[in-house]
Image (cartoon, rainbow, N blue to C red; front, side):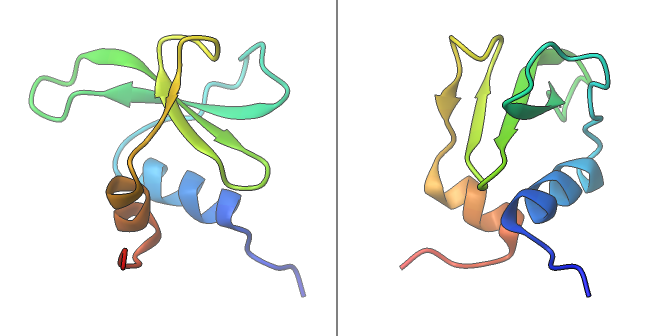
Length: 81
């Protein structure tokens, strides 16, 4: 039986929010998904999900920053503290 990893859970949660996987992304280290504003639908950057579950957001991998613990916990359906 295959195990569901944190990476898989994060990707599934982002896709459920309407984000799409970028199939032709140059990064081999991260799974790249779109990042859109919910109010306008405008694409403002990308989410980068690492193999071990790291979650970053930004326009490029080099400019990306880790997302807050609260947002990550919300995606995973857990609570912080």
